[in-house]
Length: 323
Image (cartoon, rainbow, N blue to C red):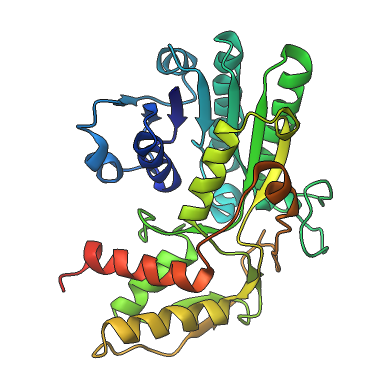
């Protein structure tokens, strides 16, 4: 089929585009390259089924051009990061809500068969319940969390009002190949790897006991393609957690990275950890129930956190330093 992937030059998007091409689908990759990168899609450029369109989801006409002839949509374009949303809620809202509305509107207008979109674990907000179950959420803790919850509400309303079929995927702390370690809002795993490689001490927010359900990108790609391709009607018009289904403390995470780097580069001088204050808007603990996605989509997360860290470190070593 022909699939529009918004945010296709981003970290998750580029991995999804590659997987779609491997399965024989045609891909239209739309990205404004604000947080995505040409480097992520460079290996795909010469593929006969790959088309790149430079465009911003805040531009309705650009969305309309990109979706021409597409049967389904995977909407991944967004301005991520809880801290960035607290610093700049207006841009976060414009991209994540106005942009989302543009994309789902053109999907409805062009009568696409399914609209798959990236939701977020941040939607669970101040709920202390563990593991996180899809139908029980708390109040949002950041502008970013608000925007991602609004996306879920819009998807439901577009299904109720216009019959648009959707699947929303609440991704949990995704990491892996093509994730950028640069910038103030870089995710924790690539940032830690880069800092250890430069023999500087990464700062852990809080005392290190906060937990996350870290999820390797290969698991996320698998779940996303299952959502795109399933023909079970009971699986559609649902929100799913996408995670490994376990919790890892930040200290445990740092130790995994340290261990892998020590094995790969024994001469590396790895410093001690540094601890700082908790970040505003952060959820203290995150652990997803994956029962629903296992039951309705047949999802199996094959890559563990430890194996994912090894894969990610190996990728960083080939990309960012000369061996």
